[in-house]
Length: 87
Image (cartoon, rainbow, N blue to C red; front, side):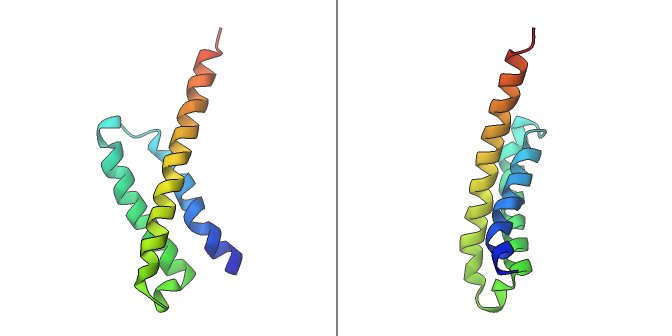
C-alpha cells in the first residue's frame, strides 16, 4: 500500500480537477479550494500519515490542489480542441 499512498493525493486531485470543469466559473475557485482541502485531509487520513504528524496535510493539500489545477487545464484544453475540430 506504500506506493498507493504516494499517488493517492494526485489521483484525488485529477478527479477534482476533472469535476471542476462542470462547475460554474463564478464558484469554481471556492469549490476547488474546499475540495482540495478535503481531498488533502482524506489523503492524509487514508495513508495513515496523520498518526505520525498532521503536518502531512501541508504536503497533501498542495499535491491535491496542484493536480486538480493541472487536470482542469488539460480537460479545458482538450474540450476546446474537440469543439474547434467539429465541422
